[in-house]
Image (cartoon, rainbow, N blue to C red; front, side):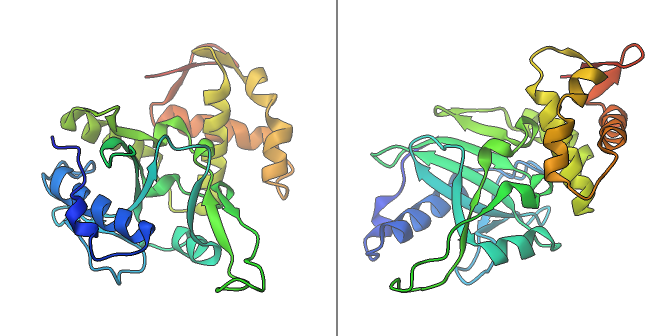
Amino acid sequence: MNFNFDTSLAENYKSNSQKIRVMSESWVGKNIFCPICGSSHICNLNNNMPVADLKCDNCGEIYELKSKQGKVGSKINDGAYSTMLERINSSNNPNLFIMNYSDNYQVTDLLLIPKFFFVESIIEKRKPLSPTAKRAGWVGCNILFGDVPIQGRIKIIEDQQVYNKTEIVKNYDRIKKLQTNNLESRGWLMDVLNCVNAIDTTDFSLKEIYAFAEQLHKKHINNHNVEAKIRQQLQFLRDKGFIEFTTRGHYKKLL
């Protein structure tokens, strides 16, 4: 695989962000398979598409691409806050590619966050632009990448090592079992999954999960029976094959 951007594509652009957008989208369109169905090609979409950059013609899934020089941190800059919330609540929310590239315009890393891992709690509202700014009052947002459960970060390329396509598609098929279109249920599921992930050991107890109850209540202030909700989400994770019950009040994480 050629990891180099085609820098000739950026010659007619002045804005650095536009240059990166054109080069990175072109690179994905030429080099990356669909991580959802395995199709060998993803198509670039017209620039006026409001929510997506790329599409798989085989399965119809759409993708947005975010690119960053160097390693991604705990937050990823995105667009308008209101638009992002509308997308999360809509049926056309795209899956998200996150790309890292080097200072000499080589792709180093690429991962996928499936659309059903997006919940309102991982979208951070930024301060409005100042009155003197060109877009005064505009409110942007950040994606809190660090709050996305590790199960929702599907690695495609890591340090220029390309993961096996068959394994990536199988991984997606497995985590798709977590998909739910109810945003409240999705929010609870992602939060409890993060709590499970935060426990260092493979085996854990209900008592250890209950230790996160106060933290969860702050995120879901209208729920007054947090422990029952935790048990409900653990049941869901068990039914979907992500954990198993061992003995009463004890669980085991599954690979």
